[in-house]
Length: 180
Image (tube, rainbow, N blue to C red; front, side):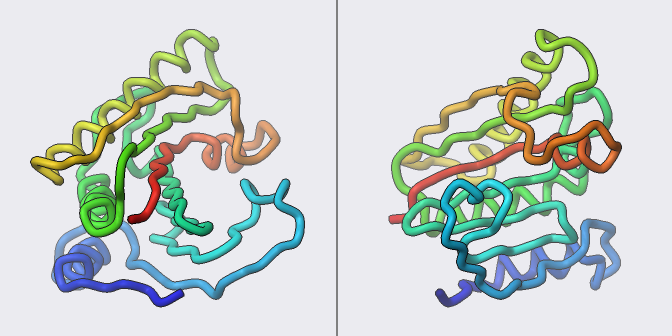
């Protein structure tokens, strides 16, 4: 699989990396492809291509399906569904990928950690997924894509455990779509 780079995407990465003086998350780094034989390990093992923005954004492509997982700690302040300034650069790259590749339905799924009640975390995960949808829709403008927003609270942890690191890994927003 060949990585796709465009001038606006590279500019967003350069700006995000702070190479032109603008603060932002670290630049993207390409990782080697990884193949596993056990499909049950998919959620914890990156099966195909992985892009990492300093751990803030990871993208996995399996066949035609693309799943982008973005760390909520970069997108939002604690206990908030308002996007941070750093979120704009990360979501701009995601919007560019959607414009170039996505067809049909784009699923946006919010996840939280296990601190607080399920009801509170369900609401927060839904509001965060909605904020990401709104930002992506605004960046795309008119599009044939349909957005589905869902919150899953702490029902589907990315990693097990109650350490600060495990909880941080579980706070995320996933964007899933089919490539055309």
